[in-house]
Image (tube, rainbow, N blue to C red; front, side, top):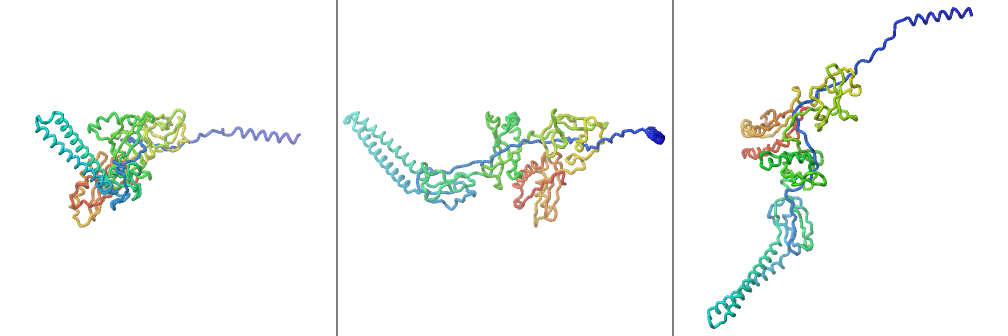
Length: 480
């Protein structure tokens, strides 16, 4: 016990010395680091997208109108190729129809002969005076009228027979692309058997039909009278093919149906597109992109990754002047690439958190690092999107090319509302005309519009330059 007492005293002294040392203090973690961007504020066009079907401007079914053997398919009948109007396509055995014409002519001659006899008889009875009763005269007049009716009947029969004979040769009623033969040669064809021989589709222009929802239809209907009076041009639409590639030529809306489909709540709309390369075919599926406004409107855009959603709706996190995280409830509009339009909730000068969102909490203090928005084409340091028209020429004076080709192109296209500036070069056998587009321009739509206008310019070039080929190359702002 004497040995343990000093040991206990020493232990207590050691513990007291430790407890009297420096007090332990909690060090809070540093503020979370986040990246912020300012919203993009610019004029922006937005689009609605619909599914559409392509139809030819005309689709004609070629039928056999008389009964007979399909005697001949002419050498001009080439399935899948363009056939010219009035080209002879088929011949039906016409021997019975020639005989019918000859018989009709004979019946007409017989009727005319009977009419002549009736007229002579009537004339003689009238000259006989009191020697012939009035009844005989009346009978003679009736015989003349009957003979005249017989002549008209025979004439009608002859016309029918001649028309049936003409139907034995079948010609193309329009210029268009012809289908394969629906029935083989030497078969019996006609109204009661195989009447359909082929179809012809006029495909130099194509009709595109799509169904617009009621909200979009109302925007069109409110301005329909302006469109009909030609005060305002209906909007152009952009087509996307089934392989995801944009069609080079814009389509123009020209007809909207006269009623809303009560079952689907949609309005059937038709647009017309040129088809010079024959890419569009009857029955083809396309996506139709229709601008929601006639002109681009001012919009606020932020990266899609910055938008969050909870039970209260969509929101974004922003950083205020005191580096505090502030929640902003927003109403989200249409997507534009990797951005989305904000209809309500932001003014455009906020610092929106785009990275490190998971470390940010409403009301918490953060360290904000401002980064450049790669999608902001309004930054002065970012180059504008552009469309370059190029062509090669040989043997012509560059000054002549500049005067006769480049200037007309530049003058015709530079007034486009989306063009910011134009640059031209003519050297080493090549001309380049570059159109720099305004910020916010839809590059695909601008390309198709400029291509259409270029086609019109080419038609007015001097004859010696009419065979020049032109290429269009579009360059987005982010890759220049």
